[in-house]
Image 1 (tube, rainbow, N blue to C red):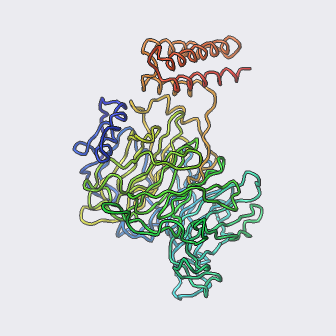
Image 2 (image 1 turned 45 degrees about the vertical axis):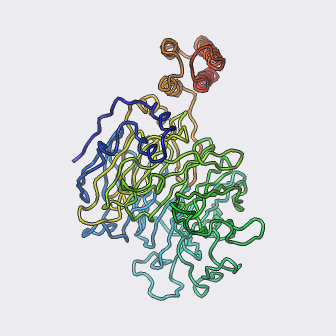
Length: 601
């Protein structure tokens, strides 16, 4: 059964109202239409594959159950078969699983077809794809070098595998493991990092979060949690180098002490664990990163590193350098990160409760288990605001901030994000101090009798659709629909951004072509924010319509330049206080029109 929310008549102006509210009140206002008493996500009926659904400004196109061999038909709670993270390439979606991975043909997003399944247990199965290679994280002690399902019984064994696997998918119907890079603490997540100066080499930042194995099993591993022992396997990340012409020669080249005290060199130089005072969260110590998001084009990476959020300089990807770090008394466990497109803002998530606990209760503090949004100014991070799923969940639903990605709407910062059994939430954080929800999709709990870990592990926008890896259900495909918070023109502009490959922890720059669709998206934003007097806005729209109907050529170029010049004058008038207006948005629209004119030379 599905519930579809009917959009109310409130407007985005609520964001300005929130600035005067206390933190709890502000969090409650993060959906501009629904409150906790009338949100359709509240009170949904339970079910493994037949739970009630609620949606607002987005539609579920299809839901594909996990294939045979990748689930336990007797229970949704068998963690040996949990779906995990995803990567994308062309018309393929790669979905990780604790039991291996599955590849889907998504050439028809409304009807994905299973293309290939690879059985290779070991958890947690997070995936990345690069060219003809798939990378997969393995952390559990049952993992085997040969991908066997029988596990490893011995406490020390050369057959055990914990680290990063590399598969050759040149023949997609028959993937072959070509490398298995062992690490001391296994691989919980990994991040691909390209080198702008070396196309022949790929780097992998590995984040191991488990206990270390002994040196008897892997030379150099020291399972001693003592920061005064310089040989300890803790308080580091791993850097793996992959020669793309010979990926079988991939190797661990360094485990840099990126958490060290800059003055003393002590490896445990950041948050040492514990609370931050009365009424604050108890935060894990920083001896590892859970996740690192690299943005190679701007030379930065954001590390969500258990007790700290860290900004790295990765201009030399073989040698990541910590340049800033932050703590937050509301965070229990720094989990993952996402930059905005221009790299001036970064979102960190807090996985309070480890992902398996109900942390979206009405009684929970809204800053706990949430996103913290930081502005980046001169290489330093400054807290701007928080965003948490606005709809309270039940004791039977594990819920906390988890993985997501940007939605490529020009002129705005929008993220689609998974909240486990809290569903998927799409929110605008263009004003980093006042984020607000613009769309959602949710299901009821897996069971009305007990809590099973489930829901969305990750939700990502990829080439026009939102793909969700559902831990206990399978693969969902959703689409955003136009609303007062997101226009058809903005959606059409987002559709113009297409990637040949997408791994969310390797963040690409989004670029839009110089076309009228993009200008219309900027125009809609200008009108939504009352950036021009209404009479003038109508005049601009009519002129844009007239120009758009013209054939390309000198006359159209001249008309575009003339309208852009007039808009620049409007912006100056707004700057001078001659009339009301949003000078920045006016100039953005004018610049987009000039970009179109430039293409006609």
